[in-house]
Image 1 (cartoon, one colour):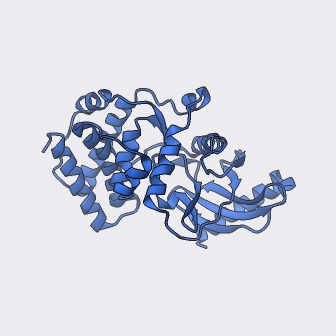
Image 2 (cartoon, one colour):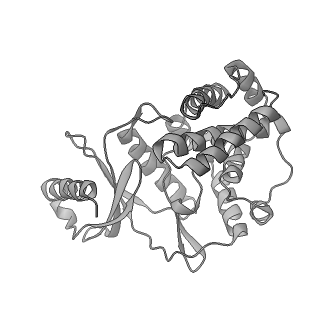
Image 3 (cartoon, rainbow, N blue to C red):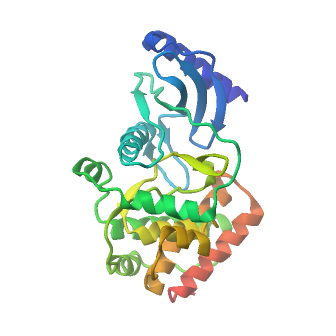
Length: 298
């Protein structure tokens, strides 16, 4: 355990003992450590085996997201996890959310084991289709309402493209936000809840079977093709995946390129700034350039 994780575990232990003694939680074991949060496993007399997600800081700021409230993300995770769980998606039930006056917040959820095995790609596609078919309640619609999705996509692509240009030094064209928004606004689709980070690291798998879908902090309501483009750009999608999803047809070429560009610029920023790695960063910058060219901007 790193010094940072040990310090977070000590703060969590103090908060559990002071505010939730009835849970009777045991020793904390670090089972996950990401850019934004640590995850600890423990036993609880009240809930059984649990995973406790603890953001490193209340406010998250990076080159992809200049200002995010980690507390709001935990609220979103609790709401969506339980919504999906009630409708047949194997999402660990979220038992309790603690919000501290000292900004130490954490979410307590059922712990789901993972044996490191990989699922069949068709099962991945079927799982994503199951998520996209879950009805959107009024509560979920309110929680995930980010205004005009086309405008939101266009704005964040333009912002992140500027970051990629600045950090990489690449001579990438500056595509106007209005042009991007017009492409996105022309989409016709049945709105669905999109997970938007559907990849192996956010799945719990035992003997090839998907037992848990984790981390709903990026979720939004939108076009399923947006998430399918994201999964493809992340390298998680092939013909077997599409068969499992029961995919028929494809979005217009310009819309598909725009949706993929949204992921490509995000990944480029990750590899240029948040988790620097020169080789994948270069590949992502080249991918961004290729997608801009597909949209007519060179």
